[in-house]
Length: 190
Image 1 (cartoon, rainbow, N blue to C red):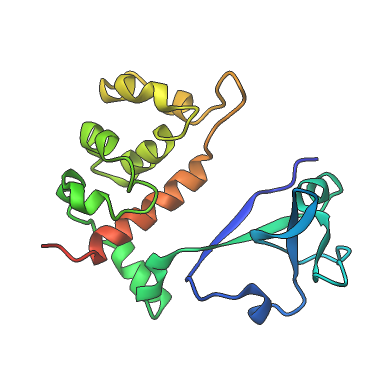
Image 2 (image 1 turned 45 degrees about the vertical axis):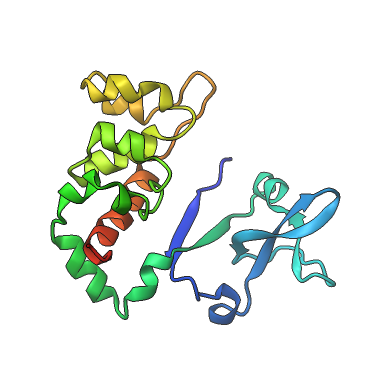
């Protein structure tokens, strides 16, 4: 059974093991060495390597055995906020979408910083459109850029698996688009 993919966005100083002392850091294998997963933890009773204090089962095999990893993704954009209410307040407000037409701004945006040409061509002006751009810059969807610009790509086509089974989850795209929206409110504009 496929386990859920759980990602939680947190400020860059968040330490899962400080907040949840009983969690076990997920592991991965690289060149026959057991290394920490970049951001994954288990809240389940999973075997632990006594020396490294990492999961004794690398995350890919652990999923097959029924363990569910939770990823805590460190996002620097959250570092400027003191409360969740500050975030909620800005999410309710529309940003100046014209900022998406400024290269120096786009180069600072989460997920979009290296995709100025695509953002310039598609000029997203809503959460939906930013989510679409975040999806379309993925390897399995890049071929759709010109069709999307002409309005010839359906949401179903954009968010469904390609011929190799690749797709970017719509929930992730929307979450990332909200981070971009927050950045448009807080980036210094000159």
